[in-house]
Amino acid sequence: MRLFLDAHISGPRIARALRERGHDVRAADEERGLDGLQDEELLQLATEEQRTMITFDVKDFTVIARRWAEADRAHAGLGIVVGIDHGEFGAILDSVSRAIDTRQEWANLTLFITRAPTSTP
Image (tube, rainbow, N blue to C red; front, side, top):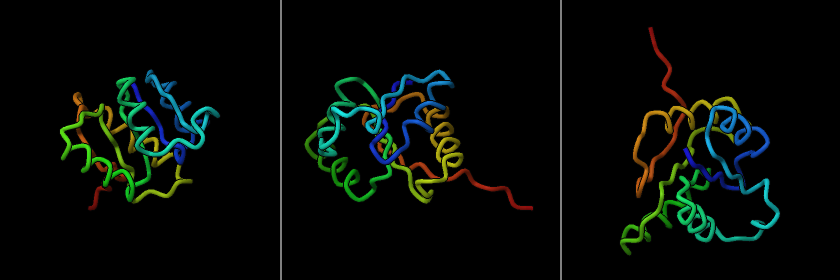
């Protein structure tokens, strides 16, 4: 899958692991030329490259997704990680992998990516 990781998701840890799993990943924190771009500009870039955007920024990207939907503006998918700390690399990787492995179509989808449910006895 073609992914674009927002600046707050570790390229060295998460992007590399996703690449090793066969995904085509671009990570904002690995590219100096992307420093200073606004969130909407990053989503536009991801859309132009047909990449699903993955971010922790629930506050800004929910507003952007709603605004784009109201304007009938398409994007290639948006995954918003919630309920997982930025430093929990294993949980982030597992949750993002689960989300992208279970969805075939991401166009115009905004999905909240959460920790995998735990089984209870």
